Amino acid sequence: MEERIVDDEFGRGIRLKKTKDGYVDVEDELAPETETEETEGTEEEIAVILPTEEDGEERAYSMPAAYDEMDDEDLVDLSPEEAERVRKEKEEALRRRKEAYESACREGEKLLKTGSFRAAELAYEKALKLDELATEASVGYWRAKTANFTDPDVLTEEYLEGGMEELESDLGVLATEIIKREYHDEFEKRYQELCEQEAPIWERVESKQKERRVVLSKRRTKSFILFLCSLLPLIGMLIATAVVGLKNFSTPDDTFVLPTIICGSIAVVAFVLSLVVTNAFFNACRMYRMNENLASTEDGKAVLDIREYKAVYEGLLLAPKTEDFGETEEDGEDAPDEPDEE
Image (tube, rainbow, N blue to C red):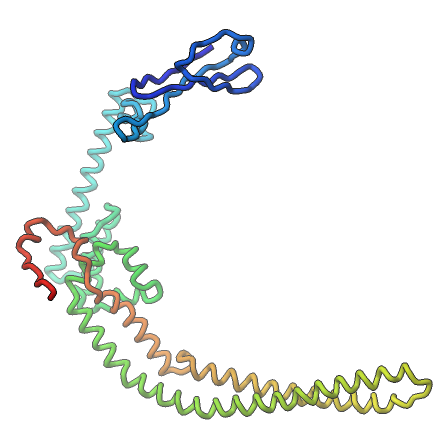
């Protein structure tokens, strides 16, 4: 029999006993032990401490200190000396990685100041691989790639489909907010240029769209009326053919054979005409939908492209979240108080 007890002066224990039959008995640890036939066959006994509430607070279970020292999987089953050596090696590798990251960022900043944007881009690419967050490297990389944001479309072109959500995911929220704050004027200038570029094209597209809409709307209404007019006779002749045809079985002579053939022939002709009219109606509906779709014309596609760029710039022009920049208490004290609302 094996017994494992976890001491806790604040807790109360229960005793779990596994019998030879595979059952588990639960007993209060404070209850006196009794020797019975059932307990004689016990294979294993485990005492478990249940946490209790003291002074209104529930005590959480804490792992032993040995687990605190070996919280890393690499340190499991190592002696204290080996664990300490591994820790130091990891700390040294982390320190060298940090130094390499900071060195690459300093190099990229120097190259940016000299206007060597391509070389700066390569330096920041190296820095991005050395840090998971890499806020400074992300900002510097896009400064280099956009020539210090003199060509901000280079950034927006990368995120026309994913939008701001993908941009923040790739760059990081903090790096995105820094870019929004530092280059707000450049983004606003480019946004106004896009608005001016879109205005005349959209005016031309909208004017032509309205003209076509009037014609196509009339055509769609006319074809729909013709569709109904062709459908009703077809249904009527099909019913007449069925009624007259069934009468052939109720008379001994061929009185209703000829009327059945005539009604059936007229139904076939009506069916062909309804197909022609239905095709015209569907084409009218298709033309109307195409007119409402901006992508169906070259000018419309140009408007859509401009609006995709504008959507990204609108996200970049949103006010940055100042709390994400980690303002210090001194900055908060120096900031002027906001006027009270009346």
